[in-house]
Image 1 (tube, one colour):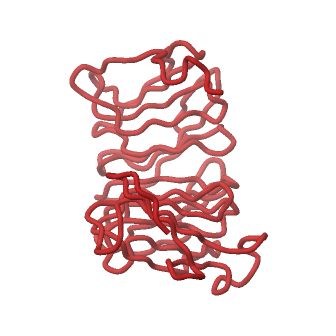
Image 2: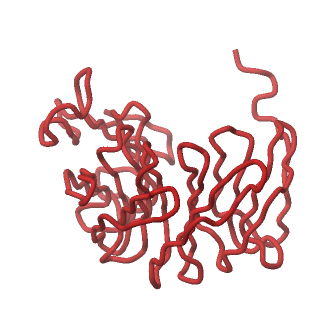
Length: 272
């Protein structure tokens, strides 16, 4: 049974003329990090403490153009914040409940914007999606204090979103790229090898891997004929995933043996 309070408003914040662009909960659920256009003078990143009833501001920072994407490290001890432009570099903050956000390191990414950022589940690597065609997807190793670039891949007109598989072996990326709006890479530790590319729309804006590793959801705009704005692909079959060679374990498509579920986000229709 659903609780009677489901959907009821607990608290809210009015930012007057500006608005959040990225929101992410700390793994403990006790903190909420909000980034966006300038909320007030020289403040576009705010950390709130949440007690289940209200939000209390405990720390702020200024990215000038506003953070566009953020992701907490699996340990909760760090958070990565990606800027909208080159005014501020990709920034890693350390976190604790005494000092809150303390800048740990910055990574120069040139005159590009960061559209997406995602830590690998083990926390040893971080991937970003950028609007740069040559370096649309970039992966860095993380030592706890420093980022080192280990791999990158071109991506059409740029990538919009990245997401690791639960085991950290594969990286899904999406964006605007002819014939490859959704791309799956195998990450070797030093490189990104293309495993599968799937066209389905003009630009894909967001991708997410299911916690089981078996499904990938991707959403975009202006789908091609026969496709929809939101699609879910089945990645593999069998009781164990990713234990075979990549060519045998990654299966995509919508034939009788390779099913994909499509959801029309406008009409709520499911089809097989």
